[in-house]
Length: 474
Ligand code: SAM
Ligand code: SF4
Image (cartoon, rainbow, N blue to C red; front, top):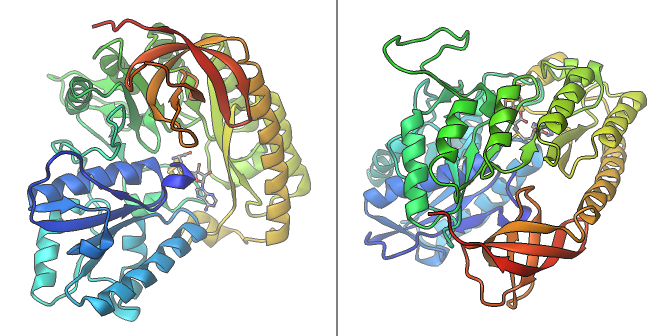
């Protein structure tokens, strides 16, 4: 997930946008959605729109939405109410809804509640200029068709990150996993991987523009494959094949000064060859996000996750064996259908075993059309879900604090990202383990690597002092 503080962030293009019409583009949800918004901005730019952060001067408002949990949808619906008022004041304002809510709610948003003029699903962004034109002729415009091959591979995204130091690069779209709680396979369609050469070229281009970190994005990066079927058969014998480990190596070779991260790994698919490539390259960060969801095998079975508690713990052992200092984070869901107190205790005991450095933690939220909605009862009372979530959060806060305390006194390489949120006098940046490090600015520059001695911490942040500036390797 993306930082809570950035939910609803409006995208603005740097430089000197030439378009005469103004687009206000707001994004919600996961990194993938924020990355998609950059593709949308690129398509709209090509068609004469420049972005604005001021909704008052917008000709068109686009909201890139998330359906993962009920509260994500509620937040967007509330926001749509604000835009409805703006539309009443300015009838020429066009409002469009993009992303995961588009497919799910097209009928109600367009016809019943009359909140929007355009509905475009995650595979329909190339069609946006046509949809805008259709609205110009007085019609409502919809395209929620899901594609088997759209990867937007040829579109050079307009970057959301203003400072130009870290960027998301989408390497695959959709998901074939059908975890029983999850709406993503329905809203984003079948899994497909992007041509590796377009990925490497995008990363090379980003590096030339001053970016120093890329995060390779997919719902299940371990099943990335190019020129191979899901059964491992080669599609075109005359062309090379590429798996995720090979792709990561290709990106790591762009420059030793370009850090590589990725998200998300799936425990059932994460293989040792990926871990070995991580160990081989200093610029592939020592950090893995490995969502567990539950520590109980029966619950995992009901979730259709494809692994057991034992399998998951074996994968954790493999990470610790091959990359001993690797930071590990996870996602946990509390109160999934039928979860007993004992099953919940298994999640807590698994957390004690793994000692995650960081976690995203959620109450189960039933989603329409999913396997869980059809097969199971959402029978854990909300109060119990909340209490269990609090227990999970309390445990994680302690583990995060322990993890950060273990860094005290160490000297770590940090990529300087920009001013810290809380103080003009401080910079912040991440170490290889993805922890945020805050330190006095001194005379270092954004985009530089520095060695920082860690002197203090909270459960969320490390504090330190720069002891050396690193020389570039290029
Ligand atoms: N593809 C990734 C994976 O398999 O871990 C993550 C996808 S999802 C965008 C991010 C997280 O949201 C999931 O790992 C899960 O913990 C949480 N999530 C998904 N559906 C949920 C639901 N119905 N209720 C609560 N949390 C949910
Ligand atoms: Fe959803 Fe599971 Fe696919 Fe992740 S792997 S997007 S949780 S179905």
